[in-house]
Amino acid sequence: MLGQKIEEAFNEQINKELFSGYLYLSMSAYFLSINLNGFASWMRVQALEELTHAMKFFDFINERGGRAELHEAKAPQKEWESPLAAFEDAYEHECFISNCINDLVNLSLDEKDHASNNFLQWFVSEQVEEEASVDEVAQKLKLIGGDGGGLFLVDQELAQRVFTPPAAAK
Ligand code: OFO
Image (cartoon, rainbow, N blue to C red):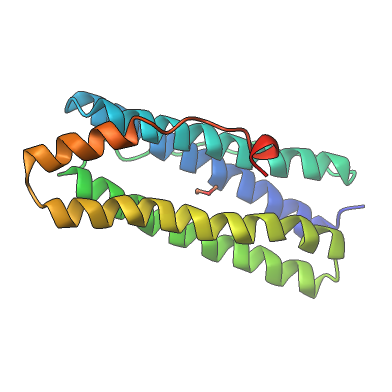
């Protein structure tokens, strides 16, 4: 049985994961608008991953006898001044999500909920990857500066990313 505090906090996290998906889909639309289709495709895959993160919380809440709830979705930012600015925002957002996951881990320890703690460990590892993958692209964009040829090559590289559902990926 899921305690009320954990249930509420996990429902909040569903909202945050869905917002992550919303934000990355908005970034995908921004990249399409400036003809960087590889960047757009990468962000679209990222958005799909975020949906699977939300679904993990959704399923876990239900499995533990709780009730998953969907809260209001806030509108994401629409425009960025450059591809680098978008990836820097994505990195900042992932650091925020990592902090949220850490707070949930602390709550699970306070509540002595070891099943939830065990469930959250997947997200602890996932956040290391999430931060690293967006930061890697941000660093490349810093290296190439405003060089159009470099941007073209990174766009081609990012186009290669494909969506892999988490269960199949592990
Ligand atoms: Fe769900 O990891 Fe990104 O936000």
